[in-house]
Length: 221
Image 1 (tube, rainbow, N blue to C red):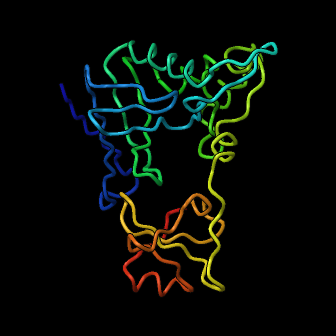
Image 2 (image 1 turned 30 degrees about the horizontal axis):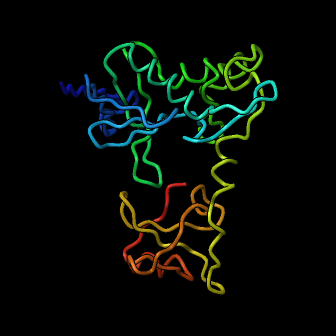
């Protein structure tokens, strides 16, 4: 079952202001958990907004014992998803082309449930929405906070490829992905993680004007 509900955010100051539209999508029986912060809807990947969970295969330490915290986090999300039909509202699109969304199962906010259970961290780099929930979970020593762990981000970086060296004076990255042709300046959010593959038509640019003339548009952040 697919239900689409449009949530209209009306301008308060002027009737000439365009109306912003957020689309909430609800699906029954079509949601699969990939890991502690990612869902699959009939082939579409959805990254839960505002949280970062251990990766599949990531291990943590609890009372001196190594345990598979990545698999446990995914199990906790699977249980939360069982609370009812899953509804997601898009917040953003990540560099991999995945929808980043606030999702609920029935009335349960899946991101908040993961943080409250200690199955994920609040992703403060992108949002402070779940920081209070994290503080409560951490103080209680639940889930991941019962022992020691490498943060999911640090775990990913430990297996990352070395940074690409930019041509002298030409350090603007022109990337082609699901969101189109986008260029990134050094210091922007996804610059370090973006890798250039010239065989796909991606390129390094010396100036923003060069990137624009080649059909690339600037990254939003």
